[in-house]
View 1: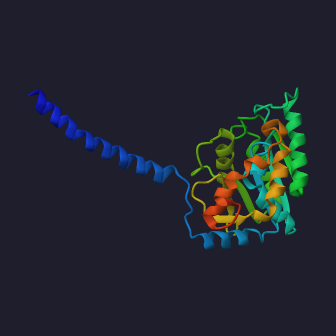
View 2: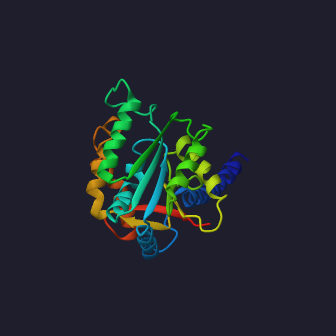
View 3: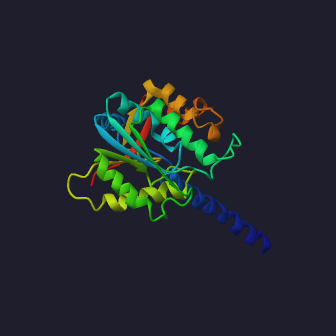
Length: 256
């Protein structure tokens, strides 16, 4: 009887392993990043984006812009676009690699320096509490006010539904959710929203020609990365490979 039970147990192992393999494949399909359109279509959509003349980017912290979409914003500025950005907090709870006695002031200065390199027309600093942006009652009214003042042809926010993993932050996805609540109340003719840090991109902007500028702008955030902006561009080489260029930034667009 013991030998029979042992044989039955061994027969169950392959079934268990098969179930784990199926589960692993399903998780990979759901949580991995993949382009949802052909590369040529994604690049064509990126060229359309680069034709916008006024854009508004909404982020949570200093360095979010330069890390995720700095190349795209630089290309827009090079095309003569009015590039306005909202930085919701000063990131005072982030790393402090320079041991600054006033990290919020340091990060504001770093953002200003990066913005000059990247050609932003204006930086709107809300100075809301780090890790409390989305929950702050002042956030959405300020964003709505600036939005109506700027009247952008395109808006950039984090992807709150399909964020690329593993890095998640309550301010990143939370601020995007709050903005999208407002955006969905707008009528016909509202601008498209380009969602970044997404694992379901359908838009690609070739940033190969401005990758050096992106790295210099990112390197201004010394308190966060020790000035090693150039060492952080490998991720965008991978995004570029997905669409057949050297470096790219990827987005998921919402139009209605």
